[in-house]
Structure formats: structure tokens, C-alpha cells
Image 1 (spheres, rainbow, N blue to C red):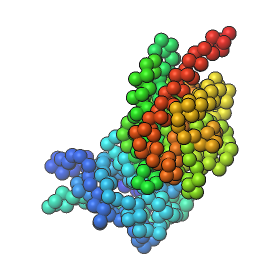
Image 2: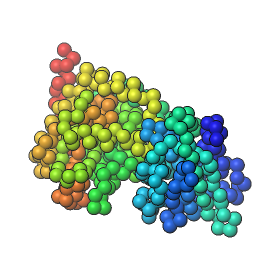
Image 3: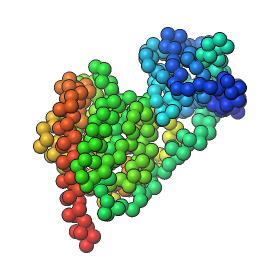
Image 4: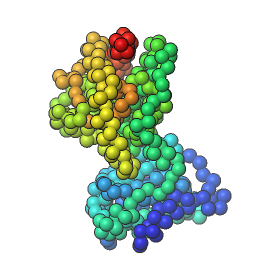
Length: 410
């Protein structure tokens, strides 16, 4: 199949349901995945994806390069009961993941072991029960053919999100208003983050983020804004754009990572640097900077922008502000009784801290690979001391920065 035909298949799958008779389109809620029948398998010269659903939904399919991925978007699917290990039975694929992408949309991403393009794609609907079957087959091609065919079809809604320029400056600060604290619960949706003993990083930091947002707003003189308030995927650039739209004065990203060695525990605070100074920082950088790629977002064309932000950040006032905030966070979390890592101040080239126009820090609130940290993060009391330490730090830091203001303007 030629490249042009492949792109038409991808796009037609996205709009196929729009031309069905009205009675065939009258569905609501989530399409439930039939876990027992759905599978990704090898076929002669490629792989096949077969998904059985309780009802038809609008969908699309396409491939992306660097790394090579097959992406299927749905509006939308209930994945409960499904596991990657059960679905993936193909040697032609290295891994797969699925989950909520953004409100109203779900995504499945299959990491391809070699260059393959969509050969056939379609959805059939049962006449008797109205169930739907999605069937996609891929065939082997050369690397050049794959690269030529890769790319998402037009999607005005999603394109609007990923096209937002992360270098656009924030609106002028309202000197008379409250301190705007943007709280960023890491991961979410199709990117769950670390998982240990039934605890999922995306869920843990979302719960903590909501508690922190409530405490920040109740403290007086500050207003909290969450980059996500449910289990949805939010691209890194969109997180910064949300912060700018809110007029952010400060940005705090929350994470709870896990290490294979399970020898790290306690909270730590990251600020941006050009290099990772230790192994833990390097692994954090790899995990968080690949979040968009893992979710299937095409980041082509943004490298220069990100590099420019990284280079400019060191020359901006927000760099020293971030460092002072990080130091204050560590001190106040200790004072509040938070268990602190033996190396509490860390630096890494984390993309979520790229913003140049407001100070940003990443708070690693603990490690899901540590049993004691898991216990603390799962309890109201354990999270409460973290919230207290962060709120106290924000208040002290804001007062210190306000006192520095006249000196900086002289």
C-alpha cells in the first residue's frame, strides 16, 4: 500500500462513524473492552490488533516514528480488567499501554519492534447486539517507507493543545492579587508513572495534589491551580501553558517515583540543570522527559524551542528564585516532620521545569519502591505533614521574594 493510501486509511477511520445512519451512532458512555477476546498477535509479515468492544465509538489509527509506535485513539474506552501482558502476544511489538488521553478520549500505543505500516484497518458492528470489533493489521516495510508514512492525521482539538508555544510569556502579574500556585500532579491517563504493590504514582500525586491545592487556597493570600484534576494525560507543554493561562507565580510538580533497587526513600526537591549529577537524577530525567513520547504525542519540531528555553533559563531571574524555593521547601518539610531523603536537593534536566517565566520545582514526595514511603503516602497523616511543609515553605518564600523586590529594582 502506498503512503498516500495509508494516510487515507488513518483519516477515514477517524471519520467513519460520522457517515453511519443515525441509529448506528446513538451510543453513549464508554465502550467497554472485552478483555477475554482482545489481543495483539503476530501475523505473516506483521502484527494484528483485534479489539472487541461493547459498542462502536469514533476512532482513528496512525503510526509515529522515533520511537516507532502504532497509535489508536478512541472516544472512548473503558479499559478496566485489561493488562498489557494479557493483550500483547506478538513478538513484533515490544510493549503496549492504554488509558485516558484527555477528557473524552482514550488511547492505546503499541511499541513496534521493527518498521511496519497500517495495511488494513476497520471497525465492524454486530447486527444483533451492536457490539463493535476493531481490526488493524500492519505489514513490514523499510525504514524509509515507515518514516514517510508516519504522522498523525489532522485533529483540530488535539492539534490546538500540542501546538501551543511553551515560550509564550505569561500575562503580567497582578501585584494586588493572591500568589498563584500551579500544582502539577505528574503523569496521568495513559502515563501512570511508577507502580508498586498496587499503588500508582499518577493516583498518589493526584490525591496529594488536590489536598495541597485545598490547603494552599485556605491558607489565605494564595490561590491554587491544578494542571489536572482527574486521571487524564496532559502533555508537558500543555502543563506549562495551563500555568501561563492562570498567571502562575510559581509551579510545583509532584511525583513519587520508584527505583528497581528499592534503596531510596524520603522526599527530595529538584530544580533544573543542564546535566543530571547522579544516577537517580538521570533516571528521573529519562522517565519524565519521555512522558509525551510514551503517550504517542508527536514532538517533532519542538527540540529547538526546548533547547532555547533551557539555555535562556540560567540567565533569567526565575532561576535563582527556583533555587531559593527548593531550599525553603526542604527546610520547611523537615520542620513539619516529613521524612527527607539523605540527598534532598537534586538537579536534573526535567522538561516539566523548562518554563523560563516563573520559578519551577519538582517535589519527589517519596518512593513507591520503599515500603515506609508507601505507608506514609497512603495515610492521611503522612500526606498532611507533606502538605503542611509545602504550604509553610510557599508562604515564607513568597514573603522573602517580596522583600527582595525593592532591592532588585534598584
